[in-house]
Length: 142
Image (cartoon, rainbow, N blue to C red; front, side, top):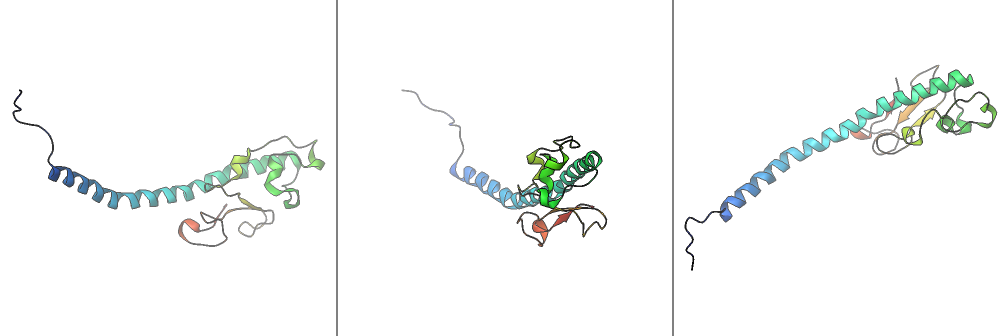
């Protein structure tokens, strides 16, 4: 029979203290991380709009005009409208590039309210609804 000397291991109290410390860290750190993640999505909307704006400029250069909302708006950047097949030199974007960071389509308004004399691209934020605050706030191109 073997006799154990100086058993090694953790006591129940030591394990409970470690679990308590981890729980406390999670309580203070998790909300901070989540709020930064939400802000990062909102910050990502503007650079994605810039990509769409560049595609719109290429479309306008090739076709001589901006897409019509009656033609499907931004869909004209992926498929040639019938009357522009000779001029259209796309596709200018992939379908995934027309979605905001929350997976909603960007709103295209040819006669801009935010940009008079130009077009507007609008992201309605996390809720996908017009208006809102925080992560639900609308974001428009400059």
